[in-house]
Image: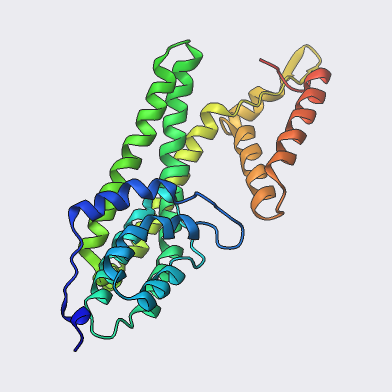
Length: 279
């Protein structure tokens, strides 16, 4: 057995801190082919040098596998990085250092189930809640608006980045089997979707304003279209408008820019005709 295989490598807290600070570059050199791959490789480079600095072949293989396609919500990316760190440490301390395919497979396997959780909580929940609170205060000309937005969004983000990294490292290769027990991963994904839908529904009812100005006179009675709609379902038209736009984007692949432009044009036309109340 060679000396390099006798030597045991250990990931320290200092190494994890270095990975944490470098993780803010996950989307540096983001590209259409491999997306976050270069940023991911940059994040792990100091660790790989420490673990494989004495083995050029192993170092090249490690750099190659972390330059493969990878894309995940940046706020929870460090959880996967922590798991990969533990696996790389295990691989460096093994005799043959042949865990490369396993490490790549774990990275690929985690992207699918974790992406909806990260996207829903951070882009569909925290961002919207933080933006709504910040915007409501900004409309009142309060400096607390942008400050609260940054705090409410970034504090959970930073905590998840650090504790996700350390938790992922502690779990290591046991994560997949741990999460699979009792269907925990599936329940977390479903819960994330429910929370996201609730937040989007509440925001749509509060901030999508669509009021009809049409009135009809039958004899001496005036029929107001908006009052009839409100008696059927309060906020019905904002809901229909929101679901309609979501349908066009998800099912018909209509670009958001086109929907925004069409909304402006239709709003101007209906407003000028008096069909919509412009506030």
